Image (cartoon, rainbow, N blue to C red; front, top):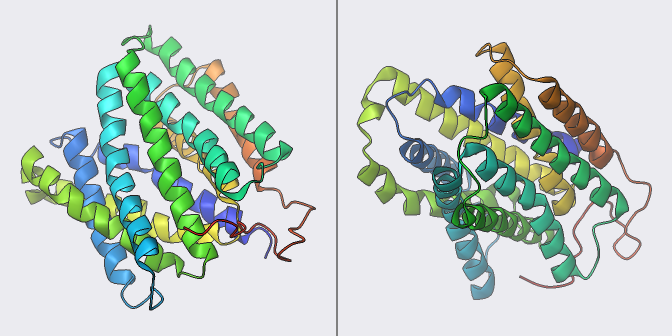
Amino acid sequence: MKTHGPAAIVAAAVLWGTAGTAGLLASDATPVSLAAARLVIGGAVLALLARRRLPAGLSARRWSTLVFGAVAVAAYQLCFFAAVATTGVAIGTVVAIGSGPVFTGALSWWLDRRPPGARWAAGTAAAIAGCVLLILGGLVTGGGPGVGADPAGVLLALLGGLLYASYAVIAARQLAQGSDSTGVMGVLFGGAAAIMLPILLVTGPGWLAGPRGLGTALYLGCAATALAYVLYGRGLRGTPVASAATLALAEPAVAALLGVVVLREHLSPVSWAGLALLAVSLAVVAAPGRARDRSTGRGGRTPDSVPV
């Protein structure tokens, strides 16, 4: 079905968007400890689901690529939280989330020697603008900019966006070579879980002993990570990775709407305009394309012109 891939990507983004609201329930956990617990639990679940689902006989090069992807998954979490701590939540989030689709499109272009297309460029530009308006509206209602733009924090956020793009492109190209989507996600996030486990232990996992903390961590790991990335992996089979990265920008829109509905937060007119712009841009990117890949006979698949 033409819309299956984009629909799965948006469903994953919806689950990611619930993470911030759910995380507030674990009030005793630091952000880094919460992120580590989420990745450890989610990665363990994905690794269990991935048993016997990778094709036999993967080359050493493909295994090394998957290992690099697992490192990128873990490093993205650390860069994101370091950026937020350095330059503030608003700027760090806009730079990291907004740069992800740009880096993904650039990496796809570089590897496949094909530009993502004019519709993707227009939709991505509108989506990034929507994210900026969404965050700026929150700054206006919050009474000021708070933390200024620290150059080191901005660089960390950009690095986070590049790391996200790297493991997204790695996953997409592994799928294009015939790997099972759940198997690929299991290797990427199972490896990241092993990397993040010492960080969870160092940051203090005591908050997991309470029912609220444990319940929050299980939801974040099982639903907002494991289930979300199963959907994301399946969505990548029918969606070019550059478009998938743009569709994933539904995440901040869902988070903002949950803030209004669940947390009784107030959105300014600027933020509402950002949400509207995001909705339009996602519809543009998700709409089925008229052109098909004549060289492969498939629509929406990343061409396997450069082996990974």
